[in-house]
Amino acid sequence: MTQTERYDVLVLGSGTGGKLIAWHMAQSGKRTAAIERKWIGGACPNVACLPSKNEIASARVAHFVRHAAEYGWILNPGAIDMKVVRKRKRDMVEAQVAAHVQNYKMSGAELIMGSGRFVAPKTIEVGLNDGGIRVLTGDQVFINVGTHAAIPAVPGLEAVRPLTHIEALELDYLPKHLIVLGGGYVGLELAQAYRRFGSVVTIVEQGPQLMSREDRDVAEEIQQILSGEGIEVLLGGEAIAVAGHSGEKVSLTVRTRAGERIIDGSDILVAAGRVPNTAGIGLEQARVELDERGYISVNQRLETSAAGVWALGECAGSPQFTHVSEHDFRIVKDNLTGVNHSTRDRLIPYCVFTDPPLAHVGLSESDAERRGVAVRVGLLPTAAVLRAQAIGEKQGLMKVLVGADDDQIRGFTMIGAEAGEVMAVVQMAMLAHVPYTRLRDAVLAHPTMAEGLGFLLATVPARNV
Image 1: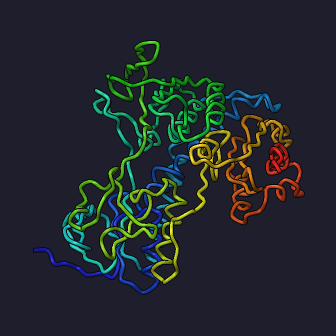
Image 2 (image 1 turned 90 degrees about the horizontal axis):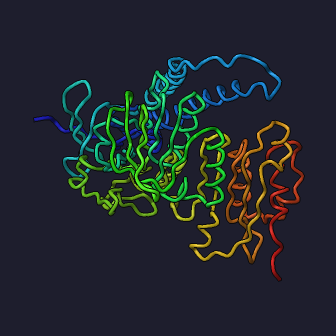
Image 3 (image 1 turned 120 degrees about the vertical axis):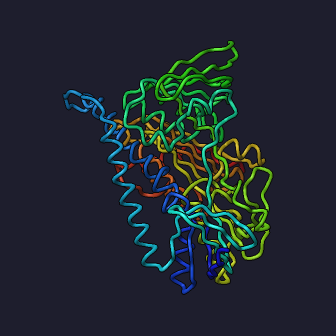
């Protein structure tokens, strides 16, 4: 019988929130162990945020080279070597992992590589990756197991061994024709990247627009940009059957309003949402309850139904962004030290790293309509921003929502060069409750993309008095 080892703190999963709580608790003098199945540091530095942006950057260079003549540089574009693209990405990941291992050593937190499952309250059995079993119990337990890519129940889809974002970032060849199943953020980023590398790309989205959470005008702008690069976008297309083998030949049957259509390609990428990694890890033994979607039920302090057990990040239903998992860590840390901090009313920004990127914070126009929030809307094409004209990156739009009965900014969306940095300016104004008129009338440096905020805010209709 395996002897149970006692710790002050156990962390199941080493994603952003998990690793930060492990390092913090260990540095605070707690005997701490973090259990990680595969990816040291979680998905972000290994197979998600950073690797995808690394390859997107390579694709952006390819795009610039292909269009170099527009800037006065005449050269032969040459060809993409996907082995070099992958190596560049892998080198970055290896450096990130090494930094994480060093942080574990410096913090004093023990990193245990293996698959963990609860066998009793606050007790985890770990099947070690190098063989053997350990049983650990902790006074405080933190769950940060993340999510994985959903594979829709389309006949034949699983059998063709489709790519997810993980496999797509490991390709050492260029797909001749990549079919992307899903028009969400991940699918669009990778679709554009592979189109720029040289693949024929078709996006199939079941809904009436790309990026279902965005306003229609925003989604249409992104679609126009992608279509302009030669990406075929099929909206309202329901996948009903798949045959073949991804990497060789695949055939996707799609039902549309005009009837059935068969799309033949070489590879298929599934980007159709996420599923929490909560099945099969013994949460019922830990007395940790799940919601109807399979996410861990937590309160606004991220406490689960089991005393002394917290959940952080995507598995707890938090918005699926690394910066949110980091904020979850801050909430838990504060509450453990007696500071009242919760998830209520937090202002969460996000960026989609298409090119040009999309950035958003606060309410969208459709959000405001659903919630009955009266707003005034300002719109500006990115092409009206003088820096966009100077650098020749004029695609996109800027959109702002201002309260109908006050001058507070309720939301902001931008598609355009440096959108994330411009969005951060607006976010700061929102956090400080600065009226939009102060930002509108501010002296902003010329020529910058942020200077466009003055032009945008000048389009906001006057308040009815």
